[in-house]
Image (cartoon, rainbow, N blue to C red; front, top):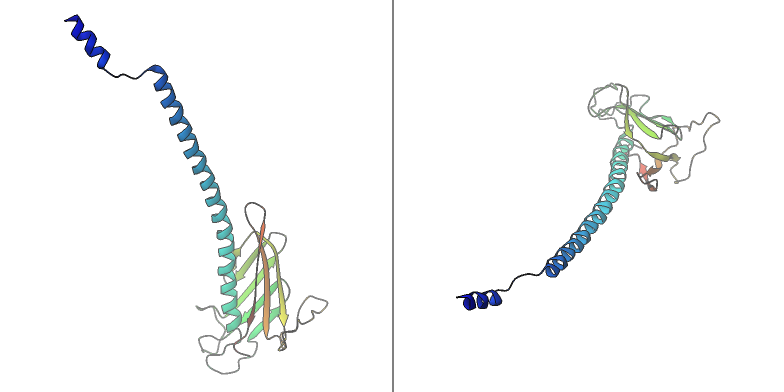
Length: 197
């Protein structure tokens, strides 16, 4: 019987301690590679999300500005209400007035008919006020520049006070630089013309 048992033990294939250690080491290397790949991918994802988030916010704000600039001076009732269009034009602020609903008044309706945009360079924020108080639309602004163009596309000169005469303005050029979380900046710009002029 001993010979049968010895023979069965010899036929049995077991795992040696060296083989176990090699398998554990290979598993640890594979796990380390997967973890490093995951961390690298997560870093790229976070960076891309932060950049596209700030860039996307700036694009949305420029889209809103573009729509309201195009509508400035619109007079749904065609009544020629005085004071419509651009009420204030400066390099850091823009005040737009329109009678969009044709009720002969400039009111706090939706869409808003009296809108003031102000850029605060100290805080790096752009606010929008429709009569209920300023609301921050965009922060982390490194620079924002509003230039006002005449019918030939030429920039209009500002007065000593910084104001630009609104009468000859036919378009607004907006340049904005926004700061990403990593400190880099992204530039956006556009030229928006008035429909009503």
